[in-house]
Amino acid sequence: MQVPHDTVVVVADGRKMLFLRNEGDAAFPNLQVEKKVVDNHNPSHSEQATDLAGGASSTRGGGQWGGGSMGEVDFHQLEEDRFAADTAALLKKRALAQDFESLIIIAPPKTLGELRKHYHKEVSDRLKAEIAKDLTDHTVAQIEEALARAE
Image (cartoon, rainbow, N blue to C red; front, top):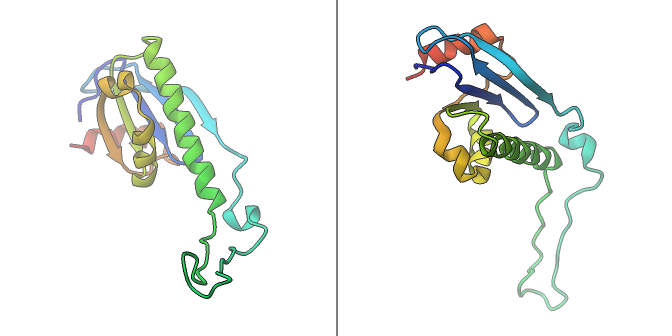
């Protein structure tokens, strides 16, 4: 994949986000880290949940609640979704400030789906590619290689 000069590449998951900018040219990208954000306040779900899922029953033996069980809330996933929404808000702020003309986002499929829910039109207009991969724990050189291999 060609990465034009000055393109912003965002590599994110539900806990980490890297803002990179291509200081090289399209054929030979030279990604430089502009911003790194790590959410250290998202412990595992089991550490956040303090109780079992609730149950609901009807006093009339059936009806709307019919003895079902309420699903347990996944607090860890909720926090990851919030982090994705915050990443999208940062993209919006930077797009409205004319900070970038071209954008590539690399994120795991679940995070990518959550980001898409929050894209502002100015972000969508600048979006050149999305890559559904988790590269947050990779080096910049490995990210450059993954971009070169992407179609």
